[in-house]
Amino acid sequence: MTTTPKGFRLHIGVFGRRNAGKSTLVNLASGQAVSIVYDTPGTTTDPLEKAMEFPPLGPVVWIDTAGLDDDGTLGRQRAGRARDVALRVDVAVVVFAGCWGDDEARLVDDFLGRGVPVVAVKNKLDATPRPDPWPDVPEAVVRVDMSAATGQGFDEFRQAVIRAAPADFVESPVIVRDLVPEGGTVILVVPIDKEAPRGRLILPQVQTIRDLLDGFCRALVCRETDVGAALDSLKRPPDLVVTDSQAFHEVSRSVPEAIPLTGFSILFARTKGDLATFSRGAAAIDRLRDGDRVLVAESCTHHREDDDIGRAKLPALLGKKTGRRLEFDFVSGHDFPDTLQDYALVLHCGACMTSRRAVLSRLAACAAAGVPVVNYGMAIAACLGLLNRALGPFPGAARAYHESSGTTE
Image 1: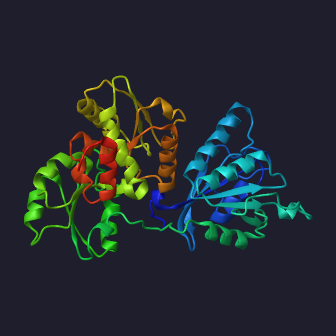
Image 2 (image 1 turned 135 degrees about the vertical axis):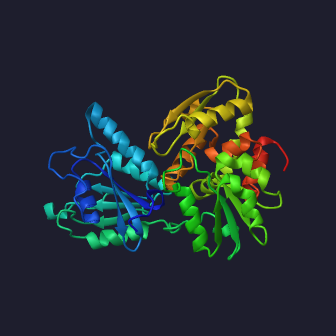
Image 3 (image 1 turned 90 degrees about the vertical axis):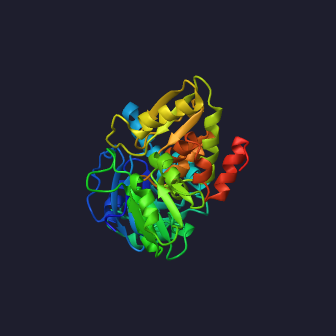
């Protein structure tokens, strides 16, 4: 449980005003002094995260946030970061102590509007012998009376979080095993280049191997230069070949058309986001014009090489594919601009280090701004003219691509 990647953990965000007891609640839930607790309002500044096991939900991440009512220039920035966290949590805990106002109501309405379950905690029972009645909150909100300081009502809070957790949340989401029969064989093509960590594989490759093992399937791992030899070593053709997106072109020449071929990035576009949305975004590449701005969004802050895929290779591929002079902006980590309407396209990474909820929130923001979005691997396949083949295992996504591009299959 302790090694479960953060992107596959249930994210539980704790929100509320200053001094409502948010940090005390996070410390109680985690069993550790994760956040500093002090009577002075505004002690918590930037969001604090704690990964832990929370039975029976399994691995989770608790996120403590600054007060929604933080004031001053820095205070408003800290409150803004709390609202950014709200876009990537799977369960929202809204804590209040005697005061429930417009800030709390707007926050709850936003969560419920995006399908995020909410647990409302009326805190500090130990300090209010005759607590005020509950405010008028939506029926969908789970209510808990407790004292985070003494632990009173914590069992009820734990059960409330368990009940609120999304029904479709699983510790190990399906990545590829539903595409091949039990006992089937999949060739995984893993280039070893400057971006591959020394002595290790990158996270999506490791997770794909484990997913195949969970499905009682066989994984044959090779480099892009050994695909032909790997195919020759099998008595019968593999059920699927999965390649790193940067080796699409070379691998496609070695794999017969009769064998399904796709990419790790495309698998994760489905697991972490919405494949049809990314497919329609890939179709928008051909509609780019001179001077269009493209946003490149990375979910992590990895060390960047000179030939970094997001900051060097993809901009070059897009320029070559479209023949247009494009302008590129770059963001990383949790940063994501609220000026999406200024962009003609968003290029998003594979999101191996972030949660599905965070990706879906970004897709929703792009949809609201009317901006197409595509992930790295699908953009590479589109630029190389290989997306039609790479979407072969996903007929629904292939239809979305052709309908948006006005082409036929």
